[in-house]
Image (tube, rainbow, N blue to C red):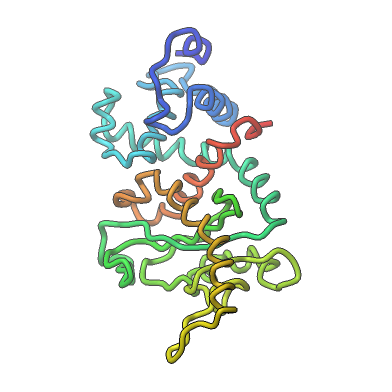
Length: 277
């Protein structure tokens, strides 16, 4: 089924299943097709799903963390076919959104930013070592995320085992090097919570052990927290993609590909008008 025929027939609603409206999906399909060429082979056996439907399957898998076998039953294809579509199309979708992500980061890097981490739950407690987070009392992967002052997620670092502390994860994930200009005090600043004390320029004062915070320290902490809370909102919107919330099922080696792709799709929701300009 061609893009033109899709436009002509009434489409089911995909907003709640993919987090993108029909126009955004059609635009994304056009860009994917421009990169991979014809989806259907010229000769031989045709693919079961058209490109539009295959992209929808990939997005539903990430959005709702659906079991591939159940998603295959809904689409009347096998679990193996779902897996092949996801493995093939997800990197292409990510590449299509690279320019959008770069533009958003170039605009945001000129202003103050906020950093925080969150845990991506997993079902594997043993491999690799250090997955168990003592803070969250469950195994998972530690993800470091940077947002602007409006709470929009703009970047993420390399995914690390869940036991790694935020301060160490910030450096090990590559974000400290990527945003080095924000750490020098000579340009825009970076805001973090007490987990980043001594690592990023702006953090609240830690409460002294034997006295209460002074009025000046309390005022400073309130001002920092009034600017820092937006990162919690940004992470909450990001975690609406259930693959980051309800248990990461794919092989752990693919996590560094999944998180950036989800972040780009989250950007695409709000910037689709200029995504492929």
